[in-house]
Image 1 (cartoon, helix red, strand yellow):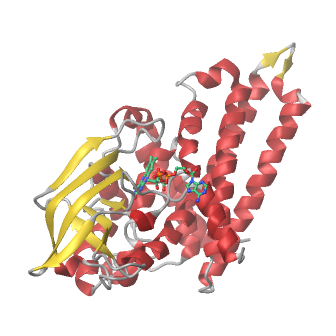
Image 2 (cartoon, rainbow, N blue to C red; image 1 turned 90 degrees about the vertical axis):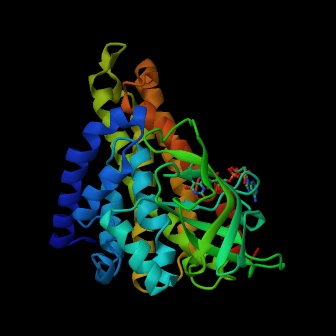
Length: 378
Ligand SMILES: Cc1cc2nc3c(=O)[nH]c(=O)nc-3n(C[C@H](O)[C@H](O)[C@H](O)COP(=O)(O)OP(=O)(O)OC[C@H]3O[C@@H](n4cnc5c(N)ncnc54)[C@H](O)[C@@H]3O)c2cc1C
């Protein structure tokens, strides 16, 4: 209904890639972290990293429906660490460069992100400012043709491997929103340090880092758009980030339910397969129903984006619903596996650990609810 033969052919090519180049390595990468330069180069060569971007910079020049196909297919990866790393590259760190960046920035930084020659990260969160982005303290002050950056960022996905960061910093002490700049910060500049690779509950195949900036001299041409309008640019970029988790969540939820149904068919308890228990069947059916509602909201958002409409409210609703649903389903399915669900050899335990991020990262559930309430005028 939403996708034609061309979309399906595209879907098949990404699916083949995930099955051959990603899923067989996921167990290993959960221990060691996925090697993003190697992986992204392969994806870039196949055109998977720049689906919506201008062919002038190596992109495919396709629309949001194709992007949705790609995001759905990376939802089939066995764990959310690698899909998050990929989405950072395609939907979190590069949309602002494509939308507001100069020709120089697109040529020098967007293009290699699309071809997979550079790994990117988005650096907004700081030790004292996460939900309240306005409270960030990192400063990039213009001096002699450079912006001199001081401060720190934390929880940065791809942070130990990134070749550049798309980074938000204060550019002046003026009150209000017009005192932030969004910058492309190459990580080979003197004064850039990875302070720590962070140890975390889930997304273990993805690296997350704390970063430190000590008088890093960012070339003046690396500011994305106006050096006073970075906050607005980042708020717009967040819409791509938050949308990016929706298609994969729907697929992940479907997969967890399918895996669990298979298990319940085989597991005999009190003389019968567990799948015969009505209480479990109804719980699974309820999750499927809510997942279908989330999928329809996702497709509605795609239609809005195709029409050029502002979908901020709908994206916030989707992000909230996705976070709630995926955690509930992961926890509920794990429960149905019993002790086996608690074992790391079972994929459901990884989903359970990974799903938890969805209600926190990229704007916590409460932040989504605030946005919805504000847009509704109360
Ligand atoms: C694995 C991982 C990867 C991440 N990757 C990145 C990345 O690549 N780049 C990046 O910039 N950031 C990244 N983040 C940071 C993430 O976006 C923040 O953690 C998130 O925005 C929440 O900020 P915080 O952790 O500072 O929580 P806080 O802002 O301290 O909030 C704590 C909790 O308070 C509650 N809360 C917040 N606001 C309100 C409110 N208005 N009303 C009621 N309750 C509220 C929420 O439940 C929230 O979880 C990542 C985080 C994790 C854990």
